[in-house]
Amino acid sequence: MSTPTTLKYGFRIRTRHGLLVESLSIHGRDEADAERKLRQMYQHCQILECVILQSGQRADMLSFEDLISIIAK
Figure (cartoon, rainbow, N blue to C red):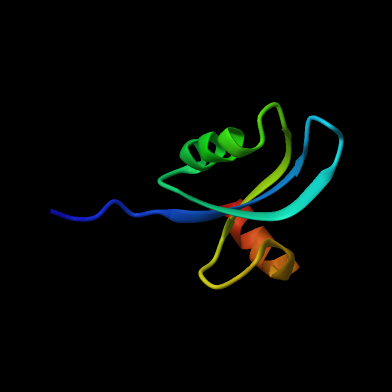
């Protein structure tokens, strides 16, 4: 039996109190799973950005070319 593959998602959010939180990394089977986990920790937050992170990289370490390649997928 194979183990479900998880991806790492990078989030940038605004909390319900207006604080900006950048570079949150959350593993999930898909974006919806990662978002569900995020909303368990930060209820009523506003998601400003969500990107799939490459292994070993943080959201603020992605180059412009990396972002374009992720968006183009």
